[in-house]
Amino acid sequence: NQVECFHFNLIDSTMNIAKQWKKIYVTEKNSYAFLADQQFKGQGQNNNVWVSPIGNCYVTFLVKFDPLLSYCLPQLSAVSVIETLDLYIPQEKKQISPVLKWINDIFMNEKKISGVLCKVEDEHVSIGIGVNLNHTPAEIAGSTSLKNELGLHYDIDVFEFVQNLWDKLSNNLQKVLQQNSFQAILDKVQDRMMYLNQQVKIYDLTLTKVLNEGIFKGLSEYGNAWLQSLTDPQEIEAIYEGRMRS
Ligand code: BTN
Image (cartoon, rainbow, N blue to C red; front, side):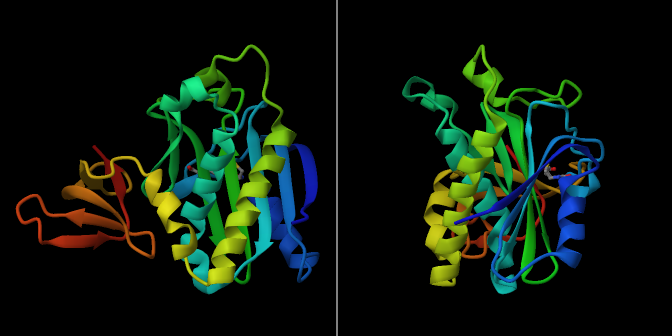
């Protein structure tokens, strides 16, 4: 599971570098990682900005993958981040283990620690991952960093983190490709879901309108959320998009 890694001090966004690289240099077999110390135009989900100060992990992996399975990439990537963060959490701190907020936000101790942005155009997909390792962006309410949550007095090594992340990510990509199905990792994704079996609301992307309300019963084989009606437990609906809150 070799990956060719390119490191930048300051660039606009690792998503842009991956996109440009893909046009010219990409080869059939290779996987690439584009890593930046800082980004001045970090891209988040829903056209948001991803604030990218020095000290955190900003990486885009460019990998060959089956476009027919691309629906599973956001949650596959998120669970890979969670498995990587797990490596850094000592036994006595397991209560703050990271979880996945549907669809694909990573939370630790009720605060956002990481986000994933996937771009699929053809069989080379870009998986952008931002993880707050050593710096909590003050301008983002409700965010945290790994260093902060663990109460560390030293910085976490970003390169080492990216190496661990690649190990987990490539392993999960492999499993899904081999079985040709998201089922290969669905159980462990579901195990880490926030609000499982709890009453939730589904909002629109701007969090202004409640679209649905019910009990979150888990994930479908395509990563959609099963929502059980509050009035009729027999009635279970699949939710395709939106933002889940308690
Ligand atoms: C989110 O909004 O939750 C997703 C954030 C994704 C951020 C990462 S950082 C590395 C890569 N480069 C970017 O510009 N965005 C992604």
